[in-house]
Length: 103
Image 1 (tube, rainbow, N blue to C red):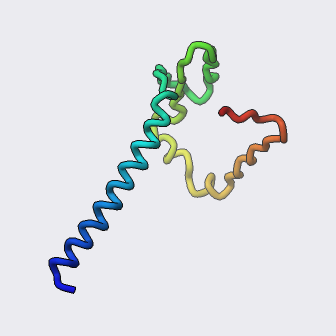
Image 2: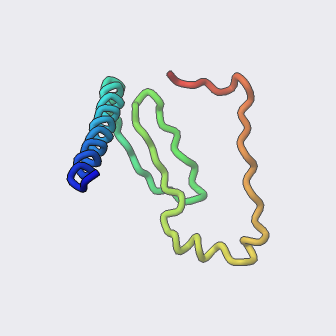
Image 3: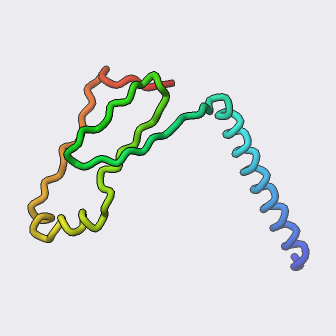
């Protein structure tokens, strides 16, 4: 097989793969366009001792709280001794029937 023919075969294979990827991406995004809705996000800075805000779920607002605004403070806190004595947090457990999946 000569070099020109190999180049055209490779170009055709790349073209087929590219068209397939674009088709899959277009189909995936078209199915989700109906589900898109606008939300507003609110970022609040909180100290570790202040309680987290409880937003009204009917407002459609997403509230994000920055827990550790200063990374240098965190790295200064975790010394070698504290890291050795640290205990892992328990894994959350979900009992059957406790969780409802949204469709």
